[in-house]
Length: 452
Image 1 (cartoon, rainbow, N blue to C red):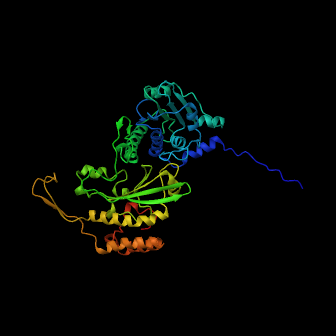
Image 2 (cartoon, rainbow, N blue to C red):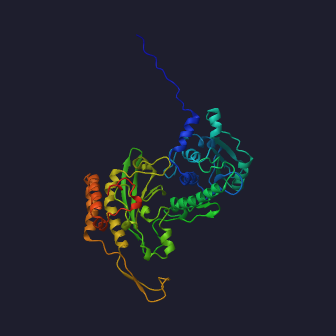
Image 3 (cartoon, one colour):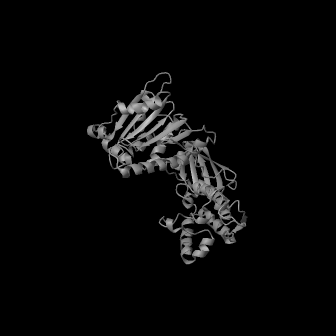
């Protein structure tokens, strides 16, 4: 018998169906904008402008930077799904999908205009339009962006190199098409505010110029952003614990994970009540406690205990920074939208002691001793000094419960202990609260509140 001939079939995906499905990989508006900002930072930008148009004309979102720009061939490649490029160790990108998936999650037409040569005023532009792709069902770009886009781009690129990204046909953002109603305008204004808050948090180290980074300027609708540093570094009574380092190796490379605990001051020790409210963060105090995880100094996760303990009122002042390099991406399971990571189990074991120490200090700060406040510190009172009554110190079994949690995690009995403590919360809520096990009603919908 003759040898069977090998057969193959072309399974190139339908362009229309694949692009439509990639619109739902997990971005929301603010994380999509942040992904475009990642590209600008990687391109060496010092100034980045985000404009969310909501006044006149059709709605659009523009992200412009003064980075090094792209050649025409590099521009075309950047609009390919899974673009072929080498990533440097400090790049914020990863999969070669961010520009496309982030943009198309919010709009149906993506245009990129760029200037690469500092000596010649030459703009290259290309448009990826989902409706054009659907009509032809072919992977194709339109390399004529239109007069309007060139006018927008020229305002930014006339004096220097850079790149301008424009979103149009914002079908996931507004419901009025090109004719905006009052609801759409309010929605776009709210998006501008939430985008400013998100970028101030995610890129706070870049805005500060800390950790060896060059200082970056970002504006949203003309308003320059100030860094939102989650650790209240300007407050006198903030506590920063010694940084710890843990080395990990993976097939993709090796790198150090840097961990540092922070305890913020209680309300009455903040410099002002406005500063206290500002540091509560976008999700407010109880949901902002926990881990702040950075990849190449870019914040990916803000708050949450990743299953190591449950959040409660008594530990809301606790925040722990975790830094890892892109060489450890596989270890942390970074997703495409760079919105979620998973702390590897081997690191969780090492974090138990850090969490115990930070939680203990946070509880002590929260339940701090009585202190006398002078009238100068309390402008609402004009008479004699007053005493602020704080909650009593945690009883000794509070520390025991923290140690018990760590022991349960180390022996693989975390789930069993969770069930026991859940029953304790029901049968003896006062005792559970004293031991730092209180659960807020507003978060009770979470699945049994992560294992302590």
